[in-house]
Length: 136
Image (cartoon, rainbow, N blue to C red; front, side):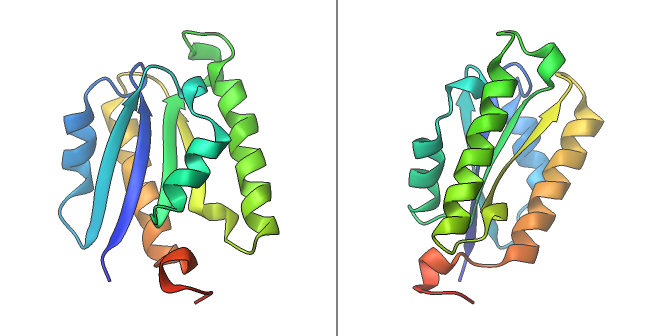
């Protein structure tokens, strides 16, 4: 079964989506990257709906809180990720299937490290129980 990861990327933190895609490589985990004007635009329901599509891992890459162009964007996203993870835990889905990374815009080595970390998380989690109809 092919796994799928969706990354929502803040346009400020990740201005070049092609770089992100080239860092992913071409393994048996499919990557979809969706650009957002700011990570604060991403809502909990959007993360849950994406995960239920079904996708194996949903991740958001945004700016570090002190570098957010919209002042509170990264902070708001942190609260939404925490809420989403609590909800997933309540319904018996691994909270780690949703997460975020913050970075300094324009930091190519940092972005490459974030992508490698996201890929490792997806591999460690394996296919979503939402795809297989149950845990495991």
